[in-house]
View (cartoon, rainbow, N blue to C red):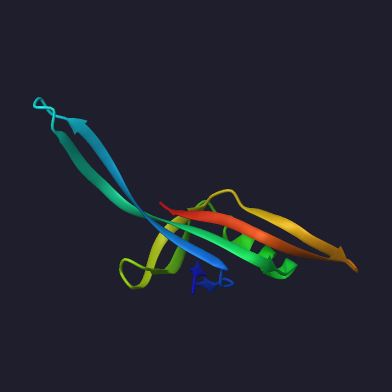
Length: 114
């Protein structure tokens, strides 16, 4: 469903695509609003209910560069789309630690188009 730098990541439990218009707006002498759309960008909100320590480590390493390529399903285009993204803050909760193995829950982070 999603690839970071060509590598398939685990399918997220929750997947939300935000379409954000970046605009500059001013009012002219008549008081009318003039809007210049600079760009339209995507923000993907991703979360996983449970991930193994290996899957989480791989995912966090793939999202660690400042910028990386992401291939994802875009609802506006109704197709796969590729863009350059960066990751926001990443968090993971520990579910349990048993026999030297840790299990993770509630893994969440956003990726934002450059």
